Image 1 (cartoon, one colour):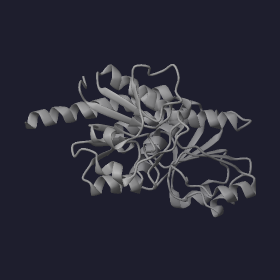
Image 2 (cartoon, helix red, strand yellow):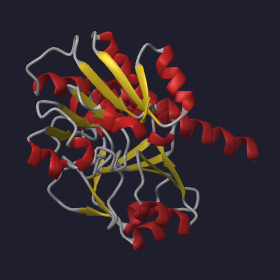
Image 3 (cartoon, one colour):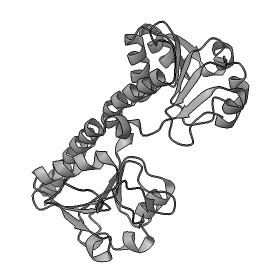
Image 4 (tube, one colour):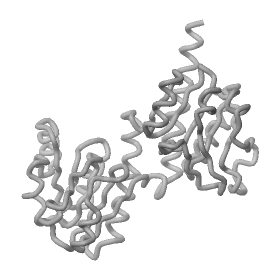
Length: 299
């Protein structure tokens, strides 16, 4: 239980609703900002406006998965009012407060570092990222079906990057009967991809391997699908870029060449917000419970 823990949620999408519900069930003292447009849900939760007084009383601050931008602006789907965390807001957070988000941009990281506020990026945790890769892969497959006129079964599918999302993506495609090739950077990943029954290749050889691909799924957040690579691809291929914005594809050149290329970050919140929210909620409750226990043991 989180009885007495003062938790403030600022902004977010449908995933955040599931997290808020979980904290309410755990008896936390929950306040929410940026949900004034939400109707018929969260009726017993205190809806507030962002203020110095509210932040001064906060034990746990929960931001959206994408945190805030480099001006402190926070995305919310449930309010038309702008939300922005300024330096003065961070200055009044209690020293013991912990800030949770999915991914922190430099602005948020720097603000917390300068004020010695504990910042936790949930998507940096292996458990959260692995669970999160499941709705990501399902969403990517949904997009692939919507934007192609052929079956995934029997098609030539390429996945770039054998991280947590890439591994789940390749495994899901394999389960649908696709011929899966996997672009990797290390010999260890090369061996694992081979053991999984995929066709591994080193990223440096991408230009040679791309010539007969039907579907390309990129998870590497650097410019890797360059104009030079795109010039080797069939024009009827489809690219689904799962890397965080701005992605790893030259979208301008892809459009010029007539290749359909789609940037698709944040798929869990779009295709399965309930599941994605429960994943985040369970991780948060466990982390906060562990922190409470540690503090209790130290007294």
